[in-house]
Amino acid sequence: MIETNNILSTPEDHFLAGEGTYVLKEDLHLATPPPHPSEAPILNPNPLATNPQPATAGTRVSLISLDVRAPPPAFFRLTSTTTLSPSIAEHPSEGRSSNDAKFSSDGEGRGTSLSDGAPPTSSLTAVSAPAFGEGNTLLAPEKTKDVNKRRKPKNNMTKSNSSFISRVIINEALTKKLSERATDGLFAFANINRAFQWLDLSSSTKADYLTKILFTKAHCLSHDVNMLTRGPGHMDVIMGFSTGEIIWWEPVSQRYTRLNKNGVINKTPVSQIRWIPGSENLFLAAHMDGSLVVYDKEKEDAIFSPEEEETKPNAGEDDGTAKGIDFKKRILVLKSVHSKNQKVNPVALWKLSNQRINAFAFSPDNRHLAVGSEDGTLRIIDYLKEELLSLFYAYYGGLTCVCWSPDGKYVLTGGQDDLISIWCPSEGDGSLIARCQGHMSWVSAVAFDPWRCDERNYRFGSVGEDCRLCLWDFNVGMLHRPKAKVSVRHRGSVSSRMTALQRAETLGTTTSATRIRSNSALSTADGDDDDKISHPVEPRSRTAILPPVMTKQADKDPLCWLEFTEDAIMTSCNSGHLRTWNRPSDSSAQADQSSES
Image 1: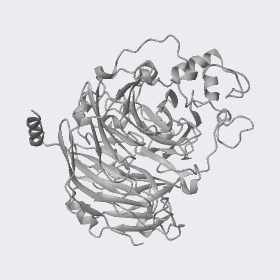
Image 2: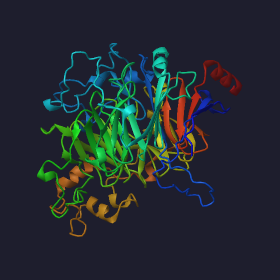
Image 3: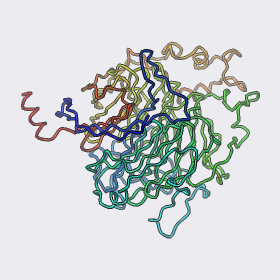
Image 4: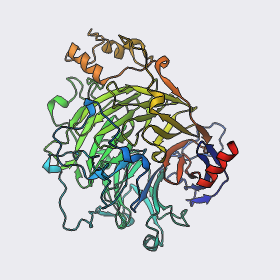
């Protein structure tokens, strides 16, 4: 099988929403690389297939702009309309704010640049939080004389003899293209199978990648770009792989560093990876054994072992799976960010579950994490304090994607129950606001459209393995309906998904057969804590059901990524099609309104 090039086409397609007609501008098909010769042939699961197909983990994309752009209108209310409950309210005695106070968050949880150097608007200056690890002087970055000279990785990728990297293809006119490109254009970084591409979407020849990296056997599953350090001459990109390894790559200089090499810290695949807001060096990786690991891009790795005796598994459980921990009540801090041992990675390590973590997102106020797991739970974590605040359940199956609303008031989750759930962690009981029913298969990505959100009305989109793109609208008054008051919640019967063991523990049963923690029985205090943290599944009869305002089969293959830009909606699918749907123009919207009248 021969390596192929990207193909740019302009198929005719469109869909109609309330605001007008979205038109398919272009379809950029990213070349799907063949399996490496050293890999065993991948058999097509279709018994009628005549030829094998390379496996794919889908196409995920990071969009990066280097210029100063006006924020979406939704961001003016980041702090004015959100009143958090005491459990996730602002931290008392806050000191230095994070460097990321000028940044908000997009649907994937990544920072979206509002300005570089320009003073933020007055309403945004309050969006601040202590820097992650504040107070631990061992984590303070070294000061350099010239802040414009960012530290670069140590290895030259083009001259690398690493068996991890198969081939690096650099555009012959890379230097010229970078010097001549428009400052307001979009860069894109995309993974497809064992390939990773750097593209310039503002170029007339956008199908020609700037750089293409082919890895030997590992597949890149997630990646992110540091919004704090990116500029015309420097960008920090991190990639997480199916082998558990991580690469820090600087595309302009083509230099890289491998972290968690050979799985020295964690051998399981990296399902998602993100830079910690406001940090130049620190990033968070979700591994598929249920762990969240904080790495420093400039530190060396070392074999990891839990630091304190009480954080190790209970007696007789030396396999490192933490079977004796009740993850419904807390997270297991195997290494704290406040540890004095910060010479090597990891900076911090938190065990959340014994099942894989599928997705996480940072809140716009840079204080909290929303984490969706294969065990069907949504966890809200104060990652500055390393504490579990709330835990919610899907109806059944795992949660596959998660994002915050632009004001930080709501959290969306999509799951294997084909539903999207709207949660409101800022309310005292962290109530479920609605379940959104419209997909016919697993939901793979959710994102808010900040250009169509205001104080009371929200627009978000979702894509799924049913190849559908759905748009949804909801407002505060529509979904906050009064619910019948029930004096006692029968937790044991609200979900068929909960096992008998979980139900027994929830009801306070302490027999030896149902006890989860082997060192103590569940006391009344434990039950009270459980009431505050673990929330039972809301019955369907008391849950608002929200239909989509638009459903469209946006591709022929399962969709896996979605993002809203000021001008368009962008989607990608498992087979590498990156599609751009232009928003309605003023003239087309007026024409649609006149035709309807």
